[in-house]
Image 1 (cartoon, rainbow, N blue to C red):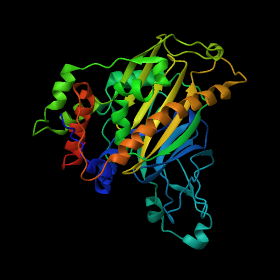
Image 2 (image 1 turned 30 degrees about the vertical axis):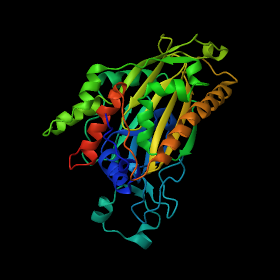
Image 3 (image 1 turned 90 degrees about the horizontal axis):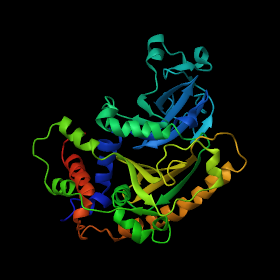
Image 4 (image 1 turned 180 degrees about the vertical axis):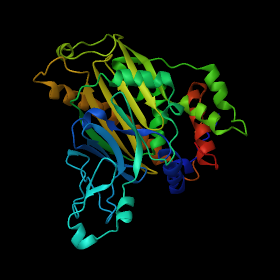
Length: 382
């Protein structure tokens, strides 16, 4: 079957702009980890769908605001993470947990805003939801309930597993040249592991690849012409899945694992795919976890943010950072292999190029594609 995705979906700035508005400003998207903003005045700064956002801890309460001072438009928090009050570096306006300026230096001498105008000056606030240790943000004025994007079973598994994350986190970002959708097509394709990762991941983990006849049959059929919004959201919930996907070829055991509280007891490779752009996995059966966040930058650019943490420590141990460094080097190898092949795919895409031919085992991608095209190429909304 020919893919529903054609070259313009990977090349067009217009398509990219519509994705930013119709997907990333409407869906719940990954914003960070709760343990990274656990203290008063801790913050996370991000740019999501072109909008600068800050998540700030106010005496234990997390709030998400547009990271733009209402006075002259400077960013309030300029670093990606840190600990400082929500204060603009330009003229030192300070904001409280409601998003209102609680202190404007020299207000009575220089600004002299009438009371009603000052009362109306607030930062734009966004919906924020913690699922265990994972923070999701929604930029919409009227956000869909998170349970309409992710089903209850997925949320429960994500909450259980992410509550096991340790507070020590290592992060890095790979700046890559491929469209973000290629990353998720790749993640939904277990057949690539034996070829792209033959000298790395495939040596330790086996991923079963088979045809799901029901999924494939549904994916080859066009959507009914008059789906309502509720039906579109029901389809959307199918795209976020979690569970054991791979089996170990002889599980490796390391001394450091005795120092952490393992999540679960299943010797399996677990994956969590949270549509549209989050991938979480534990490649050692619950002793450690990695997060892959694919951030769309441009039609042919994606920033791959990588997070590594072990399960919670039983007690501090001296070489914990060495364990994370080793894990990150492993990501550099495996993710690097993915990036190389995905950049090759992107480099071959051109306006008059061929459309991909999908096999029967690619039913999952077919389901996602028909939903995506229905949203992006029409006036339909999430």
